[in-house]
Image (cartoon, rainbow over all chains, first blue to last red; front, side, top):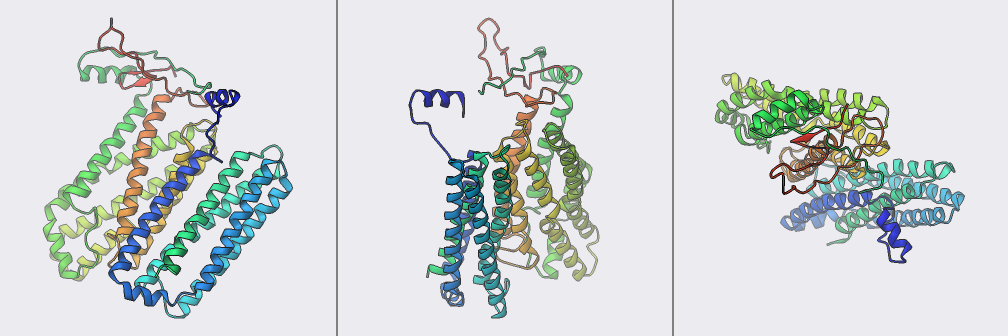
Length: 196
Length: 291
């Protein structure tokens, strides 16, 4: 906290508060803009070949996509609980929630790989169809963000484990990253699976 | 400014006079002359790079990946002189990238992290210069110098040049991750943490470009909206940010080992000394702090 904000807090004024490092919020905003650019390109291609995209989209399993979304939303809930527990000093419970988050992440990734294999076996590969090119690209780049999320969760666990470290700021920074990955998935899911 | 900010007050002040005289003075007296030399070399290199790749040879944005063999021959023929002159310039000046690698490695040596980060970056980005610039220049020059070869061979050279240039991003990816890790672990505040995360954004674009190996046309091809244009916007933001932050680092450099001091804000001109403002630790005319 800066000197001025400490003075403001002492004076009883509301201090602007951003959970975690503001720098991670910059990352979240920047990556959201990059994904928005991908979505605009996808939507433009979809407008050009609407019927072909609809036919290919029908091959996707909405139930798997919904399951993916629910799992990731639950992982965000456990991540939020991790932050909440760490704030009140309940580090054991915070650790449990961090591991729960990672477990939901693994379930998401497992179901995504299952879905990719299913689509490829049905004959829809990365280069076989324009819609599936976008599908594999968007879900693939999102999965890469999720893999980085496991590293971020590793940092959170590392912080929570030792009383010497335990930086609440870093725990919340990790949570911002995880929620960003979740948020981006909701957009990917809506565009690829739901929008007709 | 934070309470921890240290004022590295101006110890040296260049004499007035012509720009040449001031440059000569800095050359002799400025303790940061090597750092500024490297930084201005980066600026000069990116200007030359832009002129050669974007304006002269039209290799950026990359030309059509779907050209047939005769189309490729016509392309080489159309840019024959530009390729020879432009890449001739690049062969002479590509070595300027060493200054950039050195300054970035220096930034990591100034951090509180292990020196291995700086050396790893130096090795990775020295290797990256081969597929990242030299191969394209060499291969397209071969094509321009041997226009009588079989069109199929010319087509192979064309694919080789652009795929090696656009598609071989592994070293760049790992290099960006090394820089990112160093910044996030650093306790000397050499760079802001947001720039560490921007390194991750840049590293991710190196993955996004990889479908260019598979697609001959469309958004994932080597000149596509996703594989090239969006990536190039991210790279442009990243490059602009690191050039600006390196300048900021040199201005703040105190040649110590602890946290890098914050910049002293510029002071207004004094009425009795027109045109001779007292500046921060080292704006181009007043750079200081003893070694």
